[in-house]
Picture 1 (cartoon, rainbow, N blue to C red):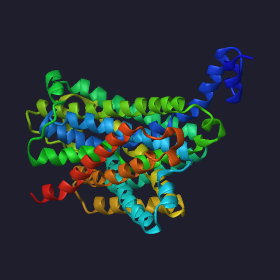
Picture 2 (cartoon, rainbow, N blue to C red):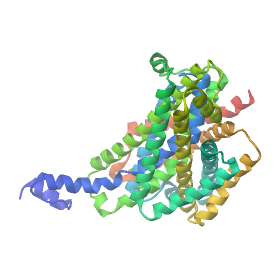
Picture 3 (cartoon, helix red, strand yellow):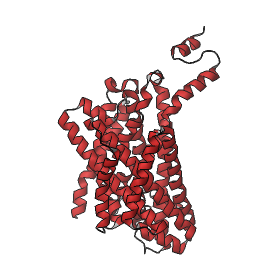
Picture 4 (cartoon, helix red, strand yellow):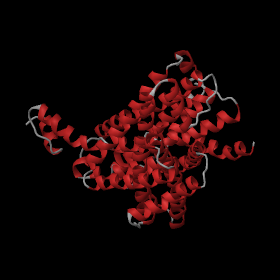
Length: 426
């Protein structure tokens, strides 16, 4: 028996022909592919649409560099979250409950719940706008319908993980197709402007506030908690026996494809906002409902329909993701669980109150993303804390350079969050 066959047998792989071994290894790696697509839905939610459209309309391509930088950080963060779940068999909230003092776990749970509330606000508002644009439905009634649809999505997940993941991939593709179609239809794009937007710079308090909103919309705290929970089932004996390098490769592939696609969609939103701004000669400021009207008037009904469908798919799919994240957060931090229907009712109340009070919809979306930016450094630092520890992560422990980069990103985001009150008072 050759040494290669002996190693294969020890790993539980068929000996002999390398092709069956490759197929067996691929079959064991395939279950790790998919969770990143679920997390990626959070990166193209209605908050992203509102923030990126506003940035494009008011600042052109100025903040393209923020989207690119935030997307790269998102890939790094979600990769670490996935590794954490695979390596430990625990979600990030569960590790916090098990390894941190009880008071710290409760405090972390409270801030995570605020993050979920802000997330739900953005997603309900976005879906409500989509339904209003498509069917003329009152905003409050549309929000209630969104809650019902999100419950259906969660029920689908209980009936099979793969079905749920395929549905979220379809939603991600639908959002991307709608936005990219509108970018092409609207036109008035500038390749030079897009390239120039890669140079880091800001232009006053408004662009700084929008940059913070983009960070909050792109690096999503609840997606970090959720991703670590979704990869937990892959820590069985068969997965643990895989070489760490293959696990890393599979998780990188999953995160790279899903979050790379989300980054393209976010950049397309900036481009759409800039194109509409140029088309209207600066007469449009980024309001989502007005965007639909401008597209319909200046480009045509098909493009307006694509925009409304993309926004609806974004809101409905991300609302289900938000509820799922909330379940994992409470279960992990507190080791308690409440019925999903009750949780959905509690988390949707702030959004309903705001909608019934007649608050400006686009403003609600942008503000929700700024609130989310304050929760990002907490999740980032928790990830760095656990992923740097070999006793926790084993062979999937972060390299020293990865830890330094992730810690630096967390410090930058934390500094941005602390600067927010100054901008709001200015």
